[in-house]
Length: 155
Image (tube, rainbow, N blue to C red; front, side, top):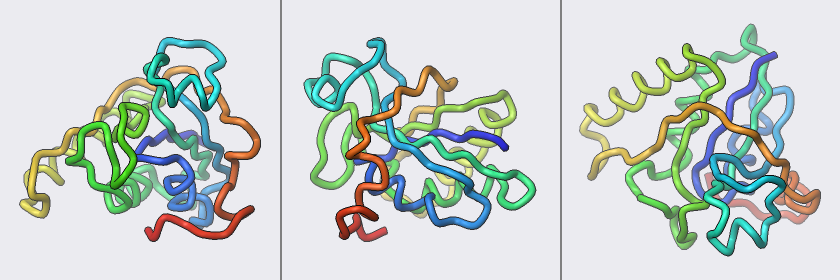
């Protein structure tokens, strides 16, 4: 099994994108990319931690490629919006790929450059591509939120 970590706005919707995909073994939402240990949702929303709301995806690379996960990531949000997605504003909602290996870094960078050159977007991609940092699991009530409460983000 391998891990992939993505941030693309509210983590509830990002988790929805990946959790039922064939080859994805598990998802969990949490916080990463900041400077505070053991952050809470309130801490992250107060903009003092530097963390992004993110989804950690555990996947079987024999059933789904990292490249396919990247395609789903790019399709699921607007990577040209800086520190926001739709009505959600703040650096915790930034678009980011947290890479767990040099190979993930290479593939993420290549896929971003291809998307940027494709002419499909009205502006340049602002997605961060950075090494994975400690992933702090969010509170239980955030896990699989839309499955528990209905609704979704319309992806």
